[in-house]
Length: 225
Image 1 (cartoon, one colour):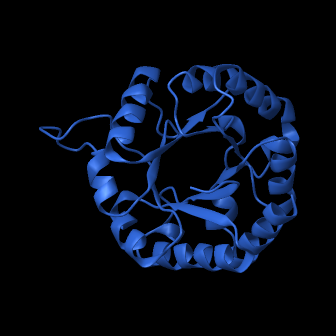
Image 2: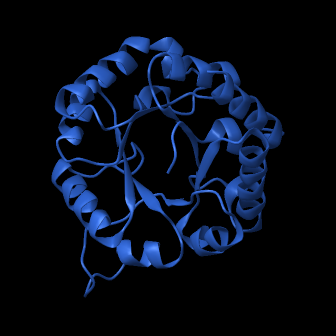
């Protein structure tokens, strides 16, 4: 996935479920084409295959399990995600926390299955430990700011810069994204200027009255920054 990027996490909102999820994914695709930037989407599992076959922008799962093919009822197999056309997955989001050991298994299995991993962490210290597992991308997301509309890039810039430093000390090749409270173009621009390679967001787009307007503003900011 080409960086910098905007990743839109659809979560489990009704506004991003079923036919509405497909419409939103197409709006993301339209903005990506118009501004020539990377906008990826992470729909719910039930919508993943339909969206992956309907758009050309990167599609990610919201979670996978670090299991191999076999007797694992109710788990999400990395190979299954790859087969439906997704390019990767989120891991360890604050709303779907897993242990560091489980993150390691997930990263390893995704690599075997041909998927990229975007692993979330809530502090610079946590992101440092995650970096030791060599994921493709790390996203710093302080949970107390998620869904608040208060961007971490402005409210707690030291958390972002601290994460960039912590990750670089382990592996400077791992790009860092910024998440939590991102709702506007200026929020995206601020994140990029701090040194990140993009943003991970959800309600700022999904719950917006006019998602296409917000997407255009954010994509424009990505180009500008």
